[in-house]
Image (cartoon, helix red, strand yellow):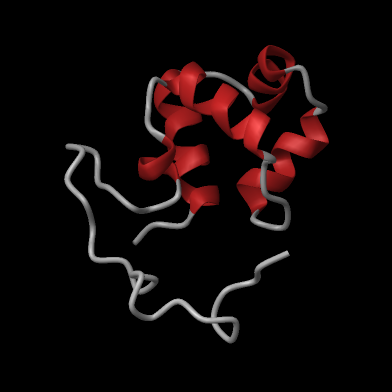
Length: 90
């Protein structure tokens, strides 16, 4: 399962745009977007929706629940294994 930050960088490079360009389209700062690609920040739900629309992908794809074809992936976080010790619930 490829992490969100790597998928964002890959999608941006495929589109041939800079971090500044996508940040402007999303109406966020370039440093904020860079944080998503570097993996030390995660987008809020509203921004995640905007990213999905911008790249024409699903949120499930971005967070690793499905592959590029739309098929569900075998995530280590299937519903039977989720508990408070392996996922941060705020």
